[in-house]
Amino acid sequence: MVGMRILVIGSGGREHALVKGLHADPQAAEIHVAPGSAAMAPLATLHPEYSQVDTPERMVELAREINAELVVIGPEVPLVAGVADALRAEGIAVFGPNKDAAQIEGSKAFAKEVMEAAGVKTARAQQLRPGASEADIEAALDNFGPQFVVKDDGLAGGKGVVVTSERADARAHVDAVLGSGNPVLLESFLDGPEVSLFCLVDGETVVPLLPAQDHKRAYDNDEGPNTGGMGAYTPLPWLGRDDVQRIVDEVCTPVAKEMVRRGTPYSGLLYAGLAWGEEGPAVVEFNCRFGDPETQAVLSLLQSPLAQALNATATGTLAELEPLQWEDGYAITVVMAAEGYPASPRKGDAITGESLEDPERVLHAGTKRSNGAFRSNGGRVLNVLGKGDTLDAARENAYATVQGIEFAGGFVRGDIGKRAAAGEISI
Image (cartoon, rainbow, N blue to C red; front, side, top):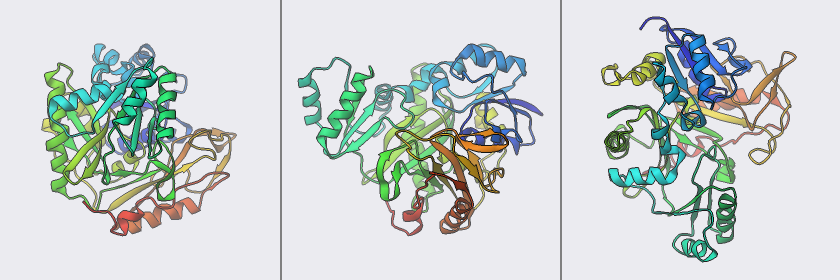
């Protein structure tokens, strides 16, 4: 297809990375983004008036208005809300799963059911529902931990999980989740280094991207509260090609086949979050969309045309796609977060630096433009990219760019990819 008109839904750093990648594909004639952010304006037409990204009717209205031939849905909320279903009903190709298939992220209990049916290794788990008795809660806690793993069984933006050795902290999170009206999942702790593997999935066809590793905790040395992710690097020097293929064979393909068997075939990006233990990969979680901030690093190494890959997935022709080509070397994303993140990030701080309008070095996750200047407008504010022949070189490049950015109260983790670069991670 020559000269595709593409609509990207979302406004964060992940969407900035998608827009940048699509813009580099000569087959993408027009790129629109809803609502987008000011930093994306050089690459795409913004539609800030379409900010209700989880309202299917509004997204259909915009897609029709611009005659979109492909819609790429960035965040999980519109997917779980059925935006992909509504667009497909209008005959528009969509990169992203239907509502039923998106439950693989929307409900952790559903994901467990699918994994059990597919024979995929994951943590032992027990669900508690709102209204659970004191005795039920205490008995469930007796079955697990320490380490206690307590998950909000719904969408929590990557921040609904508490891992703690303290029973009192685990109980507090159980009470908080149940009090919010959501079920809660208690799980056994999965040990081993974590891997994020993104796969393009079209029915039973599964094409892996490069593996990455996220850094979830807010502060250096994996201290502080969980966040949506403070940085990532790719590929993983400690994970070989055969290991990646093992994840595809033991996790992603069986899940894709099980979704087809259930009558809810998966189409879009399947993100497997794994722990690699003594017996190999086990699933920590699935997400139904590109992960943030891993996407920013992974796509920066992709040499194949992104629009063509996403369109092949969306139109059921992924099996015919040429093998993906990747740049040699490593890439890293370092998140610059606002003061107070993740609990209560401060907004409105001025951000300056000559790299701010260079998407090869900086992607915008939570900024707005006010009187010509960028200001913070979210918890995770900037994604700083670095590439290099070695992971050390990629780290140096990213942190050199960080040094050139002035952002009051902004903070980064200084150790993204550091342990891997030092050879301290092995399986």
